[in-house]
Image (cartoon, rainbow, N blue to C red; front, side, top):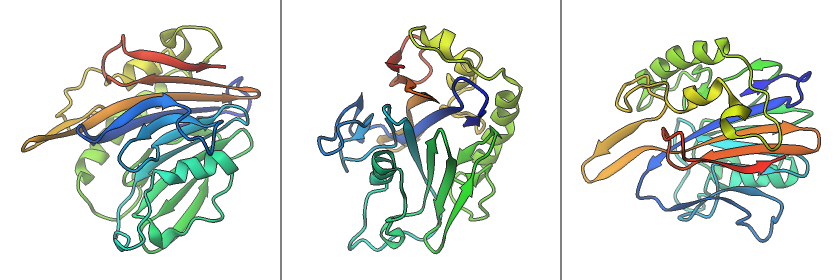
Length: 249
């Protein structure tokens, strides 16, 4: 995520979704009749989303799995509801934390960008000011001390990609231009920067667990500006031809 209040698009958000490939989902759309303004991909198993926007406000939210003790099975809620709740209302005041497994929720408007994290025992809200911010399963800039699967890979990913993102010129998305023109130097990085998906440093990952495959299933790029949203999506990560401009505002 990049925040620059002086830019035409003050908030830029890149979201990479990793999931088991056999978990059903559908690409971005207006999938929630009770929240008709929202646009995002939909998890068909639980009904929620990993990233969603309200282009009219504009507002965006993205959720990542966190680390820590899981919620009790009785009464557990899907983390995919959290982005929908913030994008629809602009508030996280009513989150019933003990009913969710650990998470990191990125919440963005033109007035405020913050990260809400829950580790199964306590929650924390951190403002994200101007600059580049990278959130992974081990927290903001990988600073969550909780050990968990993939700790070394998360550190390797951050160590490789954060300097590249920091050195890249900040994209200047604009309505009506192709995805590669809109996102410029970020796009090759979000397409994997040439790393093998089994490399610990890889952003686009792939792992085999017996008969199941886990890995990156989609990549999303979102820019928020006064009066509109730029939203590009790829459901075939690593394929430069797979990008679709969902909203070109």
